[in-house]
Length: 310
Image (cartoon, rainbow, N blue to C red):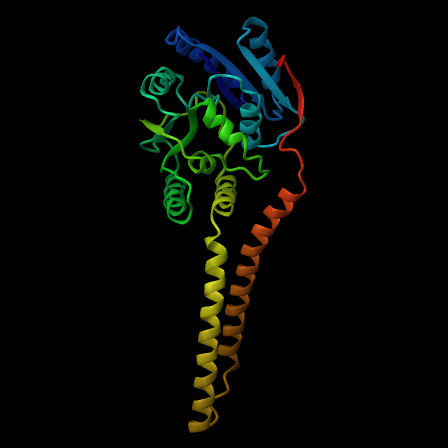
């Protein structure tokens, strides 16, 4: 069987040689399979592309796609899936945080035990900032409650998939992609492998806290309409409260007189309601922005060069 390993790369020049050497070890442990590496250069500004060409010149099993600019990891994953022709396809990072040593286990779970995909999750977040780990756990817990996608705490993009699983993913050509949600949404029989968190072998992470926050918002908008429902319910609630407050003020004015004064409290109420309105408009705007990007039908990525023959 042919296994295609999709490896998104963004400024990973320092890690590529280490990754290639570990993949060679995994290849030796899978003599019954043909393992091809498909690197997707996501507009790197360092020597990533030159290193990929160097590896491809000495190994026919190394393929690469290079984008015209940085389109993001989700676009790189989609490009890899679109050009993968393996019986099995696996997505993994080049920084060795996705251990290639798990590939033989993943392969045999699909071939011998009949799973459609084998996914991985970290059992801990050792080495990560505590604040980042805290919000990551809260995000996965929130997504499991408000969306229909099966998302597991600590889940990685590191996943081996059968051909039908990949074909199902490719039927969803949406511009705003959130792969962790898509993996769970398509269903199929999935085996989860747990492993200890592994630090990067070289280079620096490209995911700052701010980028992860924006990415999590994309995930919520892509797989749940609950924020829209909550904003509508909160609007109804505030209307009821406002009506009750008006009745209370009128009654108090009629009974005691002079009780309708108090501009400081009035300003506080106006600012509070104004903030709620802006929040709800912002939630609506997020969904509208995603819809706007979808209807323009722009390509998810633009390929500048490749050594793929197909």
